[in-house]
Length: 149
Image (cartoon, rainbow, N blue to C red):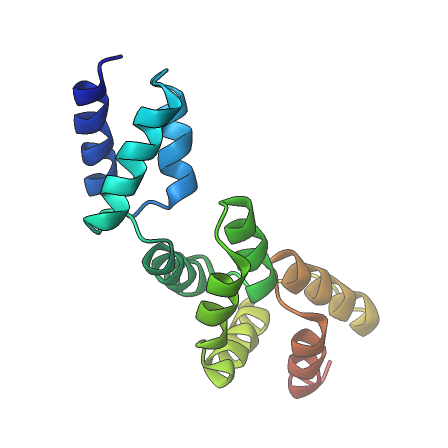
């Protein structure tokens, strides 16, 4: 593919939604460009502010917390798989308001419909559900105590 056509396609790809560097690189791999051209495009996009992994990380964390109701563990693993540097992830995750985070977990567990009369089994199901959403065991147990389960 021609470098200019690839460049225009990548610009459109970046304008459509926030992207991280790894997503751009993976997309460029599909264009069958030379490595020098790929790195030139990525460097240009970074210098001009089209891609910024920290900005991407903030947007990603905000959307997963507020829309998908994911926990920190699931978000962190997902960001690692997207090639975001650990220090960026840790910085952004440290900015989360832990009280709001626990309140959200409380609401999730309070509103989860589980048809189970046995209190022990109900607690186990809620625990597994919260773990699957990516919440930490300590936070889950604390919230389950609040719910008196």
